[in-house]
Amino acid sequence: MSRITTIGFDADDTLWHNERVFRMTQEHFAALLADYTEPDRLMERLLAAERRNLGQYGFGVKGFVLSMIETAIEVTEERVPARVISELLYAGQDMLRHPIELLPHARDTIAALAASHRLVLITKGDLLDQERKLAQSGLGEMFDAVEIVSDKTPPVYATIFARHGEGPEAALMVGNSLRSDVIAPIMAGGWGVLVPYEVEWEIERADPPEQHPRYRKIPHLGLLPELLGWIDGS
Image: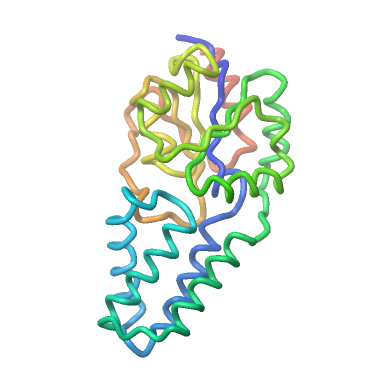
C-alpha cells in the first residue's frame, strides 16, 4: 500500500462555514415569496432549479441566485415584483461579502500536516468568491497548490493528484460531501475521508461506501493526523 504523500482538502464546510449562509438566504427567500407559496414547496422548486442549472451555471453563489430568481418567476407565474428580484440580488451580494469563520481544528490540522505532506486545496464554486474566502482564512500560504474546479469527478482527481503528487494511489481527500469529496477520489484510486458538517446539501447526498477499504469517517479535522499515522503504518 502506498504511503500518503498528498492530501486534498475541500474548502466550504470542511475548513470554514458555508452552507449555513445559504440556509439563511433561503429563509429570506421564503419570506419574500410567502404570499405565493408554502416554504416547503418553494424549497422543492428551488432545488429542482439548482439541479437543472448546474450544467450551465456551475456551483456557487451566482448560480444559486439565478436559480432563486428563476424559481421566483415560476411560482408567481411571471408576476414576481421587481422589488423581490432586487432583494434577491442584494442577498447574493451579501453572500459574496460574508466573512468566513474557520471550523474547529482547521488551522491547527493544516499547520501540523503542512510540514510532512503536500497539501492541495480542491474546491468548486465561483472563482473570485473562493479566492476571497481563502485569502480571508489565512490558510493560503500553508497549501502547496490550489485547484478551483467546475466539478469534482474521478478524472479531475486523477489529474490533480498526478500533477501535485505521485498519483491518486498516494493521495487522500478530506471533505464533508460524500459525492464530491469521498466517493469521487476513491473511484480515482485514492482515499476518501468524510468529516460531516452540521447540514448537508441535498444535491451532494450519497450512500457512504462503508465496505470500501479506502473509506474513513472522522467526527472532526483534529483527528486527521492520527488517521494518517494509522494509514501509513498499516
